[in-house]
Length: 64
Image (tube, rainbow, N blue to C red; front, side, top):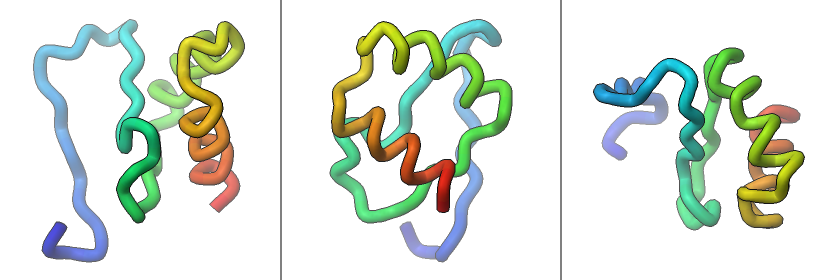
């Protein structure tokens, strides 16, 4: 990343699908999800489809 903040637009993602950015939280940056995207992440978080590390980092990003 060359700037402190960027916006990423993903094409060809169905409106009802969820996506987790910063897979396994290996990057040292924050992700600010749109509220609709964050709401869609509740199911994979509850079902533990997403790794414990990613679940923690989503919570940490939201709190930040």
